[in-house]
Image (cartoon, rainbow, N blue to C red; front, side, top):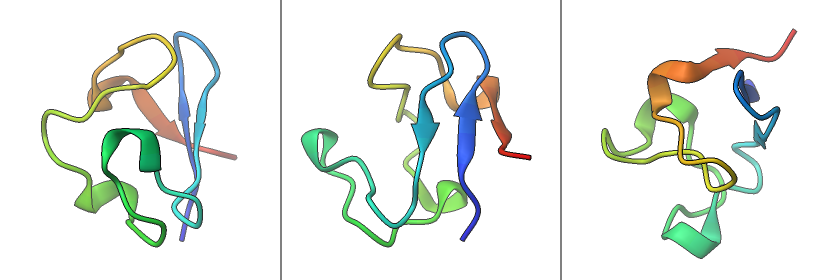
Amino acid sequence: MEKYVCTPCGYIYDPAVGDPDNGVAPGTAFADLPDDWCCPECGAEKEYFEPQS
């Protein structure tokens, strides 16, 4: 699964890790995150994330 980078702050969402502090289990693909999920570092919405190159 592909990692995604928050363009405003550089946070990397890693599907292998998920976001357990915000209820996202490890193994959750970026596309499967809830629509209201946002960056745990800066609060940016999903639309501000890009695939990591």
